[in-house]
Image (cartoon, rainbow, N blue to C red):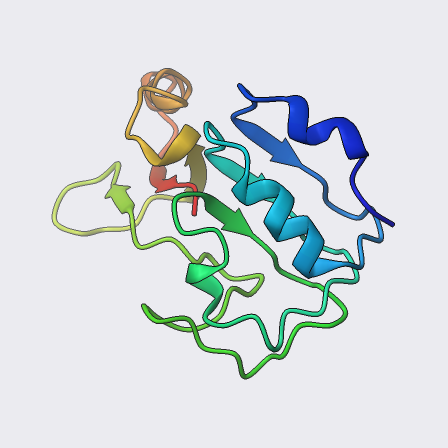
Length: 146
């Protein structure tokens, strides 16, 4: 119901995914994560964290990309400073649509490609190009992770 005590000794950790672990103590958990200087991405979805009285969602770990959807103690009306709360819908504003056909005509399929660490990289570009080379009308939506 809590992260291992030794996690604070991992001074070079960049990514932590603890989805679905029944974590409950949001205050201690966030204090621990704030002490990790190199942390970039944290996934805490589907736990039992009560986040209602901890302030705006986007201020919980200010320098970290944080995923907290589907926590039992979440207040669905909690609004972060820069937009609506995270849901099962795409919460990123960093999107790029690459249509297969000219003049805005939609292709027969849409491939949603999630990019690593929010940076536009060449992930999935090769696979989309291979589909198109095979004469498949594939549109691509490139999404930088929230």
